[in-house]
Picture 1 (cartoon, rainbow, N blue to C red):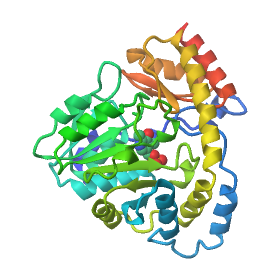
Picture 2 (spheres, rainbow, N blue to C red):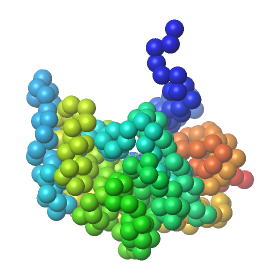
Picture 3 (cartoon, rainbow, N blue to C red):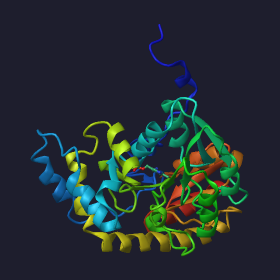
Picture 4 (cartoon, rainbow, N blue to C red):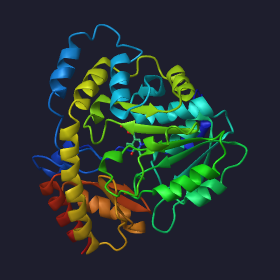
Length: 357
Ligand code: PMP
């Protein structure tokens, strides 16, 4: 008896990686170090726990479906009209809503590969056809090839900037040229989950393109803003696109706790940028140390690094785990490691050194 779609069998699962508690138990350690999901390691921002606790008093009621206060706070912070903002259960859900809002079965979704592992899953489950354009030799997006991949079936293009998992970022001149080349009726989604860690001034803020009719920008509060567990992301797009996303969203998927926590976090922008600067300093230190162990680590504009270890990736991931450090191997391709605290990064570097010895 088969009740579900046969094509799902061939689809990979989204793999969040090993549970730190399980690994610590297995190794008999007080705790394992998790550098696998690109979180910031400094705990919730001040005021967030209290705001969520306060929201907890009202959890017998549905949350505000219109997400009015939070959307207004986002609109104020990013200086856009509120009707251009939509929120969702993580930016990954918003990416899915955008595909649902743009693609009918058989329509094409173009993205660079390797990029965020959710993209092929979202495409397949939405009935869209994935068109993967190989990364360039520097592990980044080949925007010329991506523009050339557009056909009359293309409805949407995902530009992940900086790119997960390689950390590379496209620059303004390349992106300008690309956006000029893409037909106006194709939605270009700039996924900026890691925007707050960008330090290269040549890497443009996607919101500076948001006045173009066919550009949408995805951001998340999971990374720099420290709210991964509350599941909240947002979108800035033209009003018609934002309204379509609000239409296809699962009702009430921005929870009361998420709305309250996000409002408290947004009041802490200075602290967010202070924390990001710590992460960036560690990113530079780890990049340099790793350069002596692994050739070809691309410069990262995000809070993680990419180790292009090819066939050794899985083995490297296991060797790090055996030393109590969870990283994210992509078998046959590379390993992504999140920047943690200085002590966590030192533990990773020691594990990497012995794994590669
Ligand atoms: N986009 C990219 C590029 C990501 O790396 C991630 C998280 N791994 C997301 C979107 C989704 O983040 P969230 O759903 O937590 O907002």
